Image (cartoon, rainbow, N blue to C red; front, top):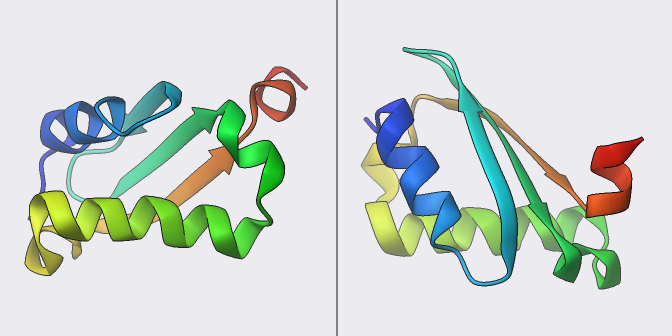
Length: 78
């Protein structure tokens, strides 16, 4: 399973990500902010992030990730 630090580091290296934060210890919740999300619907955003995480960390490491919020900078500021 991914640690909070591993997940945050991996998300911050994702292309076009402006900000990534992760909270929790055993169950992780992340927020990913990217301007590139403005051209995607929520399903596309989620697929983009989860596909990247699977490629970088492997499926087994993702078991303790409870949810990932995917926001544009404008949505994050609201």
